[in-house]
Every structure is written in structure tokens, then in C-alpha cells.
Length: 268
Image (cartoon, rainbow, N blue to C red):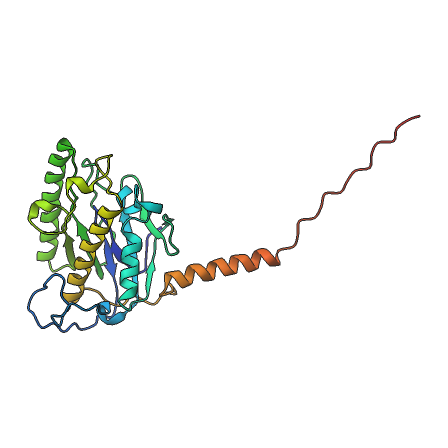
């Protein structure tokens, strides 16, 4: 089913969409984004886009699902908790649920990601009001796959640059350390399968996404989502669903006992 609502679409090793209507003005003192700083030049936490509700969709494959992390939360719960801590209501949306946290919705499955170095998906179904957070591939200890990652990353960076030149709301989360940026996963941060990081590696990736979200905010890309009945707070929505389900179960009539057939008459 085509998604008709606006979403802040985050994804690792693929593209993410953030689509919100009714743009808000962003006042920034520096003329360019400085990683780790707020718009006013400080380092304190502050609401994203003035504290508007954020709808988040994580799309990708196994890394977006958080495989090999504790309870399969990956970087998703970290990012959701961080956005909520800034003062924004957050609702993670999607057609699947994976992980161990309450608002664990998203989209992650085979063919959606490219961390195997063999597939590059061009997903252009996001609306024109959607901010896209693209991501390059993190490293791998597997030298053969790493060569493929280098090639894929070059294409991802070029695609992001081309979209930015067209004036589209696109930012890039650089995951590979070969660009000389600090805090990127190294070979030692990747697990024994040469693809998925353990918890610490996922936390590093989440921190990179945080900085990229701040960049999108600085650029004024993040806008209010259309009001189409989707709740602002995904945790509250899920709890309401569970309460409603429990009430419905409590009010359901007890199953009728099967009528017991009399024992056959035994002849003397």
C-alpha cells in the first residue's frame, strides 16, 4: 500500500524520508551547519524544528532491523529516545514491527538495503515534501566486499549531491571512515559476520544520524506533517492499542462448552 502520509524517513545503508507540511522558519547564526552545535552555536539539546511532532520511518534491510544487536533494536530505539528527549513527540511508522521497544515500527527486509554490496535500490516513492536522509555503507573487514562498498558509496555520495543540486531536501549520513570524519565504525566495530555491528557499532551509527538530523533541521528541511489522524506519539498510540485489545478480550463472551453426549446405553 502506498504511504500517503508524511514521514521523517530514516534509514541506514539506504535512503530515508522525512516529509512534513507547513514549514517553519529556522533562524541560524552561522551560514553553514557545524556538527555537534545548535543553531545558536551552543551544544545544549534543543527541540528539532521547534518541537513539531516527528513521524519516523526506518527503511532498509538487516542493519535497519538491528540484527546482531541486543533485542534487535539497533540504532532505532537510540534515535527515537534522543528525538523525544529533545522535546519532540515521535511516532515511528511502518508496515513491520521489529525490536524490543514499544514504538518499534519500521520497514526492513530483503532487497531493501545494500549492506551486502550487491544491490543499490533507488526508491523514489517519497513525496516532494519529504526530507531524505541518505546513508553510505559502513566498513567491513571483508576486503572483497569492502571494494564493493567503496564503489557503492561513491555512487551514493554522487546521487545525494545531484539531488541537493536540484534543490531537493536531501542530507547524507557519512558512515565510512575513509572520508576522514571522526566517530565512524572501524573494522573492529563490525561483528564476526563482517556485516553487522554489535551494540557499540550501532550506537556510533545512531550518533551519526543524530548529527545528520541536526543538519536537516539547520537547513530548514523538517516541516510539520499533514494532519491525517496518525497520532503524534507512537508510544502512547501503542499503549492505547494494547489497552483497547485487553478491554475487547475481557468483554468477549466466554466460549460455550461443548455439549457432552450421553454415554451409550450398555446392554445387560
